[in-house]
Image 1 (cartoon, one colour):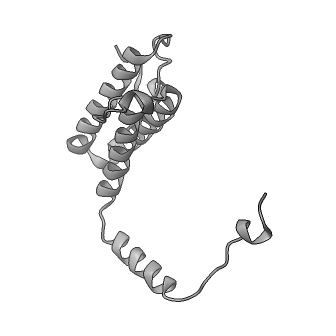
Image 2: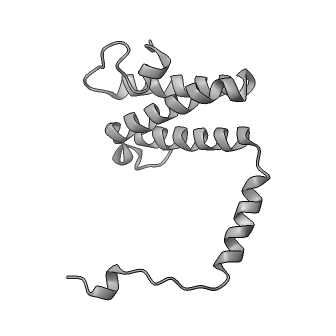
Image 3: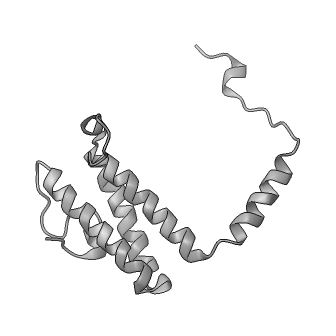
Amino acid sequence: MSTPDSNSYVFEPGDAGADVSQQIRDISEVPAIEVITTAAVHLMSAAAVKLGLAEEDNAAELKDLDEARKLITALAGLVTAAAPEIGSQHAGPLRDGLRSLQLAFREESLIPDAPGKGPGEKFTGAVN
């Protein structure tokens, strides 16, 4: 059972405003391409872990194909939408990584998706 205090947040003013200002200033200096590619790499890494591809001893325990599907679909949407903005030099490797994850998902899945119905394929087209 929870107490009233355990579910409430108390705002404590202090140096938090200065910290937020510094973070805003820091992010303003980062090029959009870097933000986009960093987000894509995070999605790729998370999807790989959820596919059981981690190098850890417990990789099989971390596998969750439902979560991997969501991450791959989000990655496909990001890569597809961002490609015209970031150029082929940056989009190419992201597309390659995405395709590898889509193929790995097909291999791991016990019930295969119909062509064009796999994770992210509504954005990328069927992956074979």
